[in-house]
Length: 218
Picture 1 (spheres, rainbow, N blue to C red):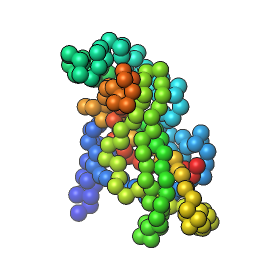
Picture 2: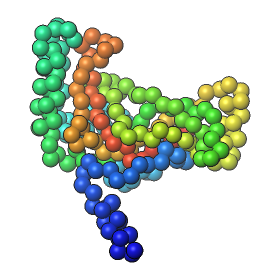
Picture 3: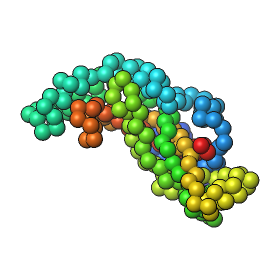
Picture 4: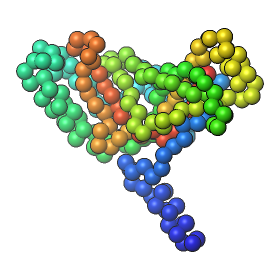
């Protein structure tokens, strides 16, 4: 039995990049630290991609320079060869970034969230969240979480729970910042496309397999 147990541990520790042996919990403590200090609570090798400059530096390390969005867009979504140009852009950049260290680095990004009902089983408040659209010189960057836990729960301290309960009872919004930590998906690390809300606006979507969730009270 001991041998089987050790073998299971070795399989989990030695899993190759892109193989994820277990799901993560969506329940985590609700922190009250400033967003600028979130990196001090995350694994030490985590690169925080929260500021515009940090996001741009990370993209430059992986892909060098922004694409020529105007040329790729051409006459728009319905123009001739538009889809093929976007497809070629993604295919070329996927191949060019293979083997780069930043591809396997643990990163953290944030999405806005809001607390709602209390869940007695997890002793936390349900969290609803939506995407963050980061305006950069590369285009709009929208991180895409992969395997995000279905039940997101922020667990506050007893004192903080009483304050949240009171605010919710008054109909007030209780906003949080959700920090999502993980690594890029090796086979679909960054997707280049165009916004459907603004003509010709380039959109960049890093696809991150989520390994940890953290909550900060705004």
